[in-house]
Length: 84
Length: 351
Image 1 (tube, one colour):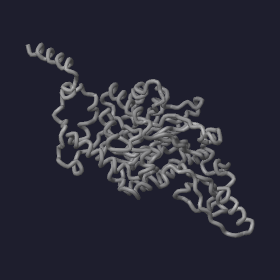
Image 2 (image 1 turned 90 degrees about the vertical axis):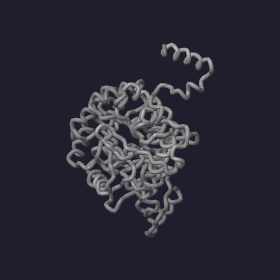
Image 3 (image 1 turned 180 degrees about the vertical axis):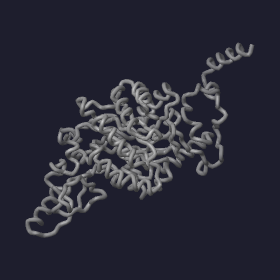
Image 4 (image 1 turned 60 degrees about the vertical axis):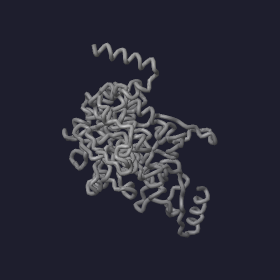
């Protein structure tokens, strides 16, 4: 994952489009268990916890919030419900 | 004594083609097969429909839905254990309105029987979710996931106290169509699960779903920190099956007429049969789906064979069958002294 993060960062710095194939720890691998999620910014600018198995595994390098993998970043869709 | 339906021999001559009526009646809910999915292990059915025809099993129990959209917890959300796993997902989901518009509509169009699992942080939230579902309609039953922390009571889990469990069930009952069956999903992490079952039954639950995960914890020895971001998680899989069978047995012993959906580590028809014999009227398949997405369908076929090979022509005949007195066949296998005792007793009765 740090390697993918570096590739994405380097691409963004050089204004080059990048795609990264991520792999998170999974239980089912078919989209039912919600284990393998990571924060990804959608086209609407909203961050969602997306499943790497079926929403990915390939995401645009500039859309994954690499440094915040393993967290639910502030403002993520539906995160208020969990924090309240 | 209904011993005549038990056969030690091969009834049909071919177990593989043996037919057995798998219909189940859970209060007012009648389903053509007693095999359901377990909540949280089948999402809302759409993904599994790629692996088997979801209309061919008893029904889909959807992942617990709450009032508002919910991101779920941080990762890691899963840890593996011997014969099982822990999860700490945090009920990630789109909220009940999106669920109704997308998932429920799809399930209805697909023709799948649907038991909607609902969750909440307060009894009031459970009630609001039920009220929205009532307006929407288009599902067959509600499962109330009372294994949620009560935000108004220091995060105490509703399922762990008879009064708080009953309060949630009563609120859901009041906010639901009176014809909709309601099942309370019970936690095994209690002193006396029968107490909770009795309490939710009196509060208006049609039946109970037994069991939810057991609370557990794993330490990552590399980071020397808890393995799950949520620190604790729910243990599921074959490791918990004996606990689940025990819970079904205890509830069935105390409440002979209460509909029970049994679950906990079922990975084969053989495992499913244990639950049925212990007193479950239907069963749910959960964690097994993660390594075999077609598990519910496979287990349905296997259970039919397991029942037929024992001489049962319907699943209903096998429900609670393990609760009967030891039958004559096992007395014959008993030590000779015991056999003599029983003969003496028989002579006495015949006089």
